[in-house]
Image (cartoon, rainbow, N blue to C red; front, side, top):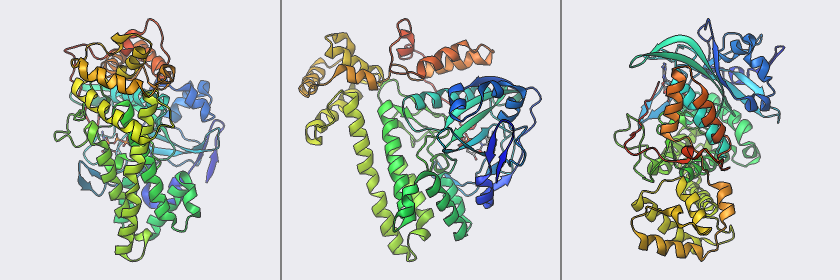
Length: 485
Ligand SMILES: Nc1ncnc2c1ncn2[C@@H]1O[C@H](COP(=O)(O)OP(=O)(O)OP(=O)(O)O)[C@@H](O)[C@H]1O
């Protein structure tokens, strides 16, 4: 049902079409909400008036305390493999879907809250979220969007004035999140586990409609849906790798059907290039290390295929063969996206064939790893080398290896200006994010505002802001972040 309030129209699509996966629930009351950040650009894209969102009525929506009449906020059910172990019942333990909005381009977008209080899925948790991690999600999702990487977006973070018990008592907040949907691999695992094939089919139909509409016209729509998710996720993870992003908690409940990055928990951007880099305090085995991400994504997609098997074919052996064929596309798609991205990062003509570029890329990865180069500034440095400034790659130990690689690369005729258009100068470096969040804890939002400004336009050099381009000072870190905060 579509409902209209003076300020906002919210639909109840998920709640009504997939009611078995939706528990109607209300957000905890917040007496004195205080807006910390609002993405005005996103608000406008959604057709929401930023001035209204800042008003008491807008804030009441952003914390879920007042909904347009007839809107139904729901906690969504989902399952998930967490660090490889299956949990049949996760669900929104501290989150609610308020409903769906039509953005200015006519696309349906979920409006969702995180940190809105306990739900029937809270298990041992308190249902709340702290200011720091919610601002962290806001900052990093904003950066990812500006880098052109598919992601859920952050509309606002509102402080609740309520203390949340973590290692110490910390201020609480609610994040208002926008996504093309919150359908996860774990949503399908949950639906499959109910044994209700009609529910599984309806869920797949919703996913096709919202994310992979071309699948509808295929002879095998559900297989085409699966292939669409494989394609989107392969491209997504390749894009993470190209910017040095480590998600940190790639459980199947944190992998979307849309191909948007979701759940900025223990994530971080690499400083030194290192395939074994892990930032999560609980990832002791390195399951979700930087270099493992493509392998894990493929593993997660195999779990999605298992959930969808009954929709692929009546005969299980046939369904498995079809699923394996569809999944086998992952590696090709990943490799194509990564190679195209690397070619662009190195300023190389898109028409070069793999045979010419491949050896240069392979040698580059070895060089980056042995020299532990700063993943972000290295590519801008290479562009400076092309302009005659050899300090762009200063400080590298093995000059012979570097010179030999540089001459191979230069033979391909790289374009320095093209490189500067795609290689970011500004990423949410761990020490800068920590600095901004620490200040915000003491109600100083200026460092956060300044950081967001550079992250919103990551490739344009701004004089005087060099400190935002530099790696963490020696001796700082290691930066570790905690799940479930
Ligand atoms: N403080 C909490 N109280 C209750 N449940 C929680 C809490 N923190 C996390 N959970 C639940 O634990 C599970 C895994 O948490 P995870 O950190 O991956 O998700 P999240 O960050 O809460 O939400 P999302 O994946 O939507 O970004 C989810 O079911 C989540 O709702």
